[in-house]
Length: 575
Image 1 (cartoon, one colour):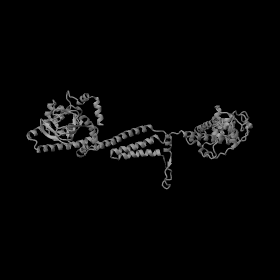
Image 2 (cartoon, helix red, strand yellow):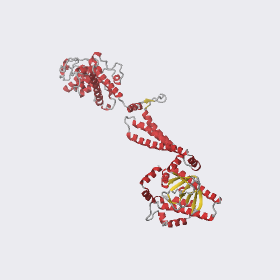
Image 3 (cartoon, one colour):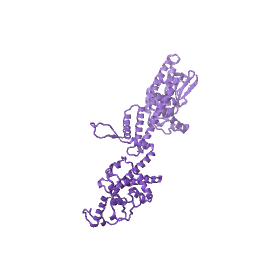
Image 4 (tube, helix red, strand yellow):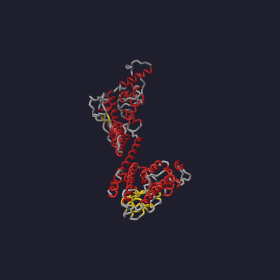
């Protein structure tokens, strides 16, 4: 069908109104968009009851130029857009059926819809379709004579001329009278089928162009959200069960999280949590609703990064632990003295320390001097003296200046030394830790703290055995003086610990129970505790309150003295 502008049916009306095509281009446009006879689209199968148009009326020669092809393509897209708009905004459906599938409308209904809305395309069909022509006559006469009787036999001359009436022949002009119009049902159906095919062909071409430029994300999205059916026998369930891979990722995520709660090993827990969060990433980004859920996507990405960092730290610590174990000296210390500690914790402890080498006669720690280091003997023997009297000897695997660490007294800063420690053999190797850095390491890693307490408890026992061995060896000539100096050394060590705690109000009140435990282990009487307080100008009441006028804060003084760079470096090393 050719309208008054020389264009065909629906797409011709859209483009001729805008003045975009000529007569020849309109003819070529409609003919180019005729699809193959084997098309099996959804819309064609829905309207399969319509007669096929005659080839002479529906299809003409194909476009000869790229411009004609482009115009035909744009016309099909415009027709498709108008087609979908009519389906969404149709007034022919009942009010309670507006939200249902609008594909129930037939092409006759769409022609009437055009007549009710715009009037252009319906004018062609009113001339060529007896059904719509009668409907138009009936509605016109009902309004004019206010009657509802059947008016099928009313002469068409009763109707006024229409400005939009067109002939069924391409040679007729728009000024022809409606009374002289002869209906041509074949051309009407050709007009309908041509419009339908034009729409579907333009839609297919548009989709083909989009598929050429489809992104990788869209391809993955189509693959993951494509509905699939489970092959369930009908005797189990007659209903069809469908699923998508995106939904399976969502179910797998929650399942993995549930499994991680039942795992005891922290490394396995983190690995399962990473797998669950990764599955949730896929589900939230390729969501079945078609839009990514960026809020849970970002949070799960953060959880993956945190857990991945912790897992990487564990494997990296294990790697460095194996490197430390390759050294026979460290491997021997670990096997004989630190076997209760995990290898990764032992490697972290060694990494924090600094190795020192002393020769015979070198002084490691001087009596009554401030000492801010804790040391571990790796190789060799050392003498411990109080006022020139040897009280005991230190051997491999024993600690120097631990200052109540076995009792939970995690002292920071400097502690006055209660004795002099010197090398008794040549090439004595010790590992040195800064006391503040070591305490921060133990605060951040409780597993190291628990294992180190167990190691130091055995260290106390071994020191007592070395004292008995020293007494039995005959090196002690004056036993009474040796016993007296041992007792003085114990009391001096307790006073040094007490002095450190009084200068750190941050943990004075928190560790009074640990201090009482230390007094019980080393048999320090309450009277000796009171004497030590008086020597430092403290009363028992002030000690119990934990506050005194003019009390120093060694933590603030240490930060000011050592500098903020050292303070940050100490925390960084503890990590």
